[in-house]
Image (cartoon, rainbow, N blue to C red; front, side, top):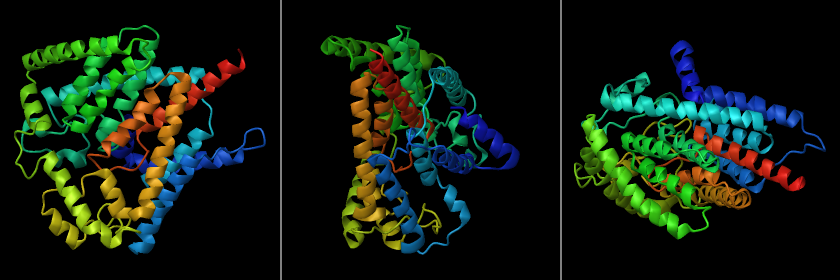
Length: 404
C-alpha cells in the first residue's frame, strides 16, 4: 500500500524503477512458495491463472519471435511477468486477521494522504510530489492537467487503479461496522473529479453499489442515493468553487468535452479506434501485429499504416479490447479475455459467499477501464489488494463454516 513512497525513495536515491524492483522480488516469492509446498500445502494453480500465464507467454512470443525484438534480461522483470507472479503468490498464501487489520489501517492513512496531495496539486502546485519525468506532460489548460496525486512514482494508471479499489474495500469495511462513511464518499468522489479522468469518475461511482448490493430493500436504498447524490454534488460544487476549484470548467471540458475539438474528444477517438480496428485487424487476425510501439524490445513507433490512419488524433487504438485483438490477434486476445471471464466469475462467486463485494468491484474497474484505455497488467496496488483481500475473506468464511 505504501508503494508510491517506496518508489519515490528508490527513484530519487538510487534511480531504480519500483515496478522492476518489485517484480524481481516476486520471483523470490514464487521460489519460496514452491520450496515450502508439500502434500498438506499443495500448489494452487487455478484456471484463471493458467490463462493469464498463457497471455503473458504470448506477449513474450509476440515481442521476441514475431517482431524479432532483441531480448534482454531486464525484460524478465516486465510488469506482466510481475503480475503473474504476484497472482500466483496470492493464490498460494494465507493472510492472518492481524496482518489484514494492519493493512487496512495503512490503507486508510494512504488514502487520506492521496486525497490531501491531489487537493494541493489542484489548488497550489500541479507538480507537487510529481515524478520529474512527468513535469513536461502538463496540458494547455488548468482543467486539463491530469493530476496524479502520489501515484506518478508507481505508474500513470495507478492514480485510479491504485486508489479506487482500495477506497471501495475501506468503505465497505467501515459500512459493515456501522461507522460513518459519508466523509469517505465525499472525498473519494472529489479525488476522482480532480484526477480529470472520465474512467476514474465512472469507477468511483461503484462506491454506491457497495452501499446497496446487500441491502434487503434495494429500491428504498436506490431511491435514497438518487436523492443523496445530487445533494452531495451540489454541496461539492459550491464548496469547491468557494476555495478556487473551477468545477464547472472541469465538468464541461472533461465530462461534457465542450472545450475540446470535435476530432480530439473521447467519443471521436473511440469511433476512430473502431474504424481503424475494422480496417487493419483482419490482415493479422490470428496472431496480431505485435506491440511495436509500447512493447518489450519495441521501436517506440507504430507501423506506418496505423500511424497514418490515426492521423495524430490518437496515440493508439484507444479501446482496450480492440487494441488487445489488434495487437495480439485472436490467440493472445482469447487468452486475456478468458482470464478476465474466469477471474470475474470466481470473484463473483466468492462475493456471493462472503457478501463482501469490494474485491469484485475493484477488479471490475479494470474491466470497465479497458473500454476507454489500454491496460492488461494486474500489477497495480488496488488490483493486487483486491485479490489479497478476497483471499482473506474466503479463508475467514471457510473457517467460520468449519466451526459452526
